[in-house]
Length: 361
Image 1: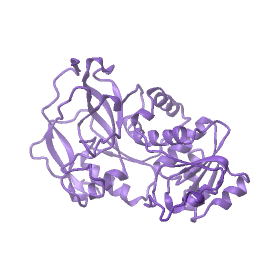
Image 2: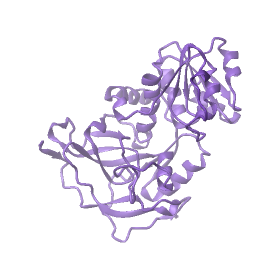
Image 3: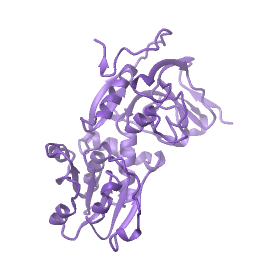
């Protein structure tokens, strides 16, 4: 067994965490004092600095996730922070900046809505940046999904044309900025005409208003069809998206914002001749450390923009963050930042400092 390397000073024995005590509404989220997780060999313990709040965590809270989720559970499918303890041969050192995401995190084992989290070492991406935690905290799941869809899913190249269906989602906005950095021409959809400016700000060349069918709009701009299309809305519009792509082009199914994941009475002949259909649902390993470093440098240089909707400070604001995510009124990522110097756990602290809509004055 590898000897562990740990940060100077022992970690506390207890920590504050947001716990889903049972499936339900916002009141099912409780701040509790819980034991700091004990790191297993091959795993890494991370002191959490920030984490994104995602729709999948709302689903977990409601009890609508699959059977791998049991309760009570600390949610959170992604987080950023610093290494607290790791195996000596892991290549990770205490205090090193790291990101982590997916792989059962916050579902089959406790996630990042806490002061500390433990994850498998293979699920850790080291990085170095001077960007603030609220920016870095928005990135892991969002960038991994967008980057994996464009590369593994679509093999997008410079000079090609890309359609993003569901463009004002966090993944859609990230995919637009990454695709532009790759040198692609980007078409992207929104259901709200007033959000076209947000698409342009992300680098989109041709914002499109989606009324349920967009194939004709796309063909007006690209008569032969686009080279690639990223489907984030879901099966309810997939047939229309397939009609926007040129012969030998590719559609990658990554998300279902509209909630429909299956097609009744599906037949392969609904796919236009010569058009390729694939899917993407990857893991942390699909975002290599050098790619993540490039993205961080591009953000610092102003070439990539990070669609942050709102920043929340402290675990007490997780309910407010989930409320805002569920409402869907503000496009972009919702990020919770933890205090740099966390106070010792308060034995009396098992309730919220604020209502579901925000902190108390």
